[in-house]
Image 1: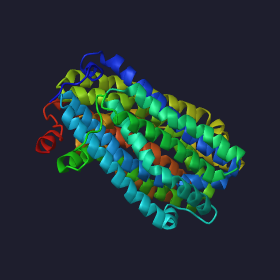
Image 2: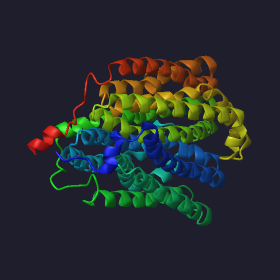
Image 3: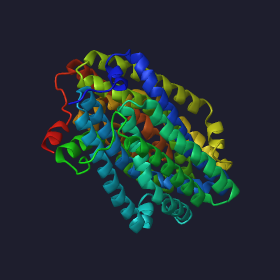
Image 4: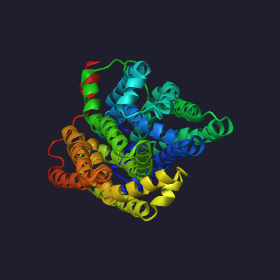
Length: 462
């Protein structure tokens, strides 16, 4: 085993508050810019093409969640395992995880893109598309599909770049794609008038640039972690180690697909296509807030993973509580903004009076308990980072599956469309209660069940 380089070894020695700032700030900036270019996509479509188009774009969210789910299955799982390996001083095991992660990314992307190409219309219909919205949703998906592979490469290996000690470079990876996307959106949608096709092509080109940049990094042997010959053949123990941790965020994104389908079908029945548009604006607004918290988690993961691997449990506890307090402050601030100025938020996406009214009602009801979401996200990241696979999967499922789906099936029959909106805060409160209990229990036992790197044995047998 080789020892980690200085930019990695700082994870065990520098003050955790300073480290969290150094690692989280690039993550927050990068994720915010990425979220902003998604928002720009939706603003351009809503303002230039019309309310049916933004509803059609909202129908593509479940499919994009599927691509994200598959990407994070590999990206988050492999980065958590790499951090633990590097904390143990096992750079050979980390390199084996990297090579297997690339192979998994290529295989998974080829599989789901093939499914999308063959069954795009039935899939969109299953998620609530109607005669007015299906053409918009189909056009966007058909044009965005060529870029989905590079989307998985860019985001998945961005996590690995950060885990191997390059948080600023990881931010640059996202900035490249974000800036390119906004610039190309303005040209393709506004100037050329290409509508949904233009927004999709802008995303394809932007993600291609980000993917190329991140792979250039890992192809260089000068860096802490780089691609090596003999690491690309899939090893059972490595794949299981990646998937067991990546399953938690992946399941969340996959569950989002089912939940979006349920929400869209319920909204169409109770409020029509414009209700789907209101839900799309709500999701877009909250995605900005969640994005900041995810940026904090990006900084938290390598610090927790490395120190957990090195047996520095005191540092794990300190950095978690700092991150949890920061995330809670952010979600509370976002809740206050969303509930105090919902009309201004709605008008940023549309000028349609009916859609504005529906969005205002949606935001005021959906956000009343949003302040607790930040803590739950950071807690889930803690379990992922220490390799507690079953706990992280269960915690990921509580909000969206254990509580939200039953509420969505029950409350609308009682309260109508308001029942859809109120399902979100009710599930937030219930899931946070479970999260607090699990965190308290884990903190008492931290370090009693250390996690193996899961690549060391496979590397020795290779």
